Image (cartoon, rainbow, N blue to C red; front, side):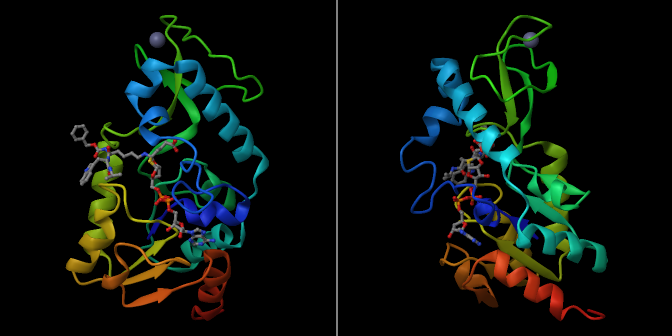
Length: 226
Ligand code: BJW
Ligand code: ZN
């Protein structure tokens, strides 16, 4: 199962590319890229601090909670997320493959030293205690490699899946967008949950054209033994 920003929309967090997506007013490559941070670290850092405050204030919604319940009840369940907000973990999913890292922790932009979480109160840049370089969020920016281990595990899960759900993602960012396609080509039944059609809708056996916070609890209710 692959999730994207849409599953957190009902927690009040904006998606990236929807009508009110955060990138309607910002160019992605200006913020979510190594070049962007190099050019203007203060603005980039402030943008992430702003988003962190929203993540801390948000609560997991019915969709996140339903996925945690599905993980408890379905054997061989793998949750792959592109999200960096950690709401799946806060909903109770312990094993989450984070393809794009997470926005809670940091590491040094210069030397790579891990730095953990920092307070989100101030927008001021924070220096690395090791080398004095600026900290950056531990997310995967455009042009950066995804964590190899996470990508391998995700591809393996997609290859061996009998059912693959694609939830709340526009399926526009690679290589994550390749995972539902891979699962489909390997014979999995592809199910999409998204109020809008996407680039993979034509491959889906079922497209639930509704919010995930509505559809996922219905799937839990339909599980055997419910
Ligand atoms: C709801 C809902 C509700 C709303 N319920 N649904 C192959 C082809 C072409 C390009 C490339 C390629 N391979 C690589 C690339 C380049 C690039 C890429 O993909 N570009 C495309 C844009 C074309 N990829 C990369 O650079 C990746 N790295 C890489 O490939 O490295 C290899 C390499 C490196 C160097 C040299 C050579 C090779 C890295 C990609 C990293 C993406 N990072 C971001 C930012 C993370 C940090 C941050 O958060 O700031 O990750 S981009 C952003 O998009 C974020 C998301 O995880 C990601 C996906 O977005 P998502 O989740 O799909 O959100 P939306 O907003 O797009 O969609 C939301 C959906 O929800 C919509 O469909 C709504 O309808 C729906 N929805 N309400 C259910 N209630
Ligand atoms: Zn450093």
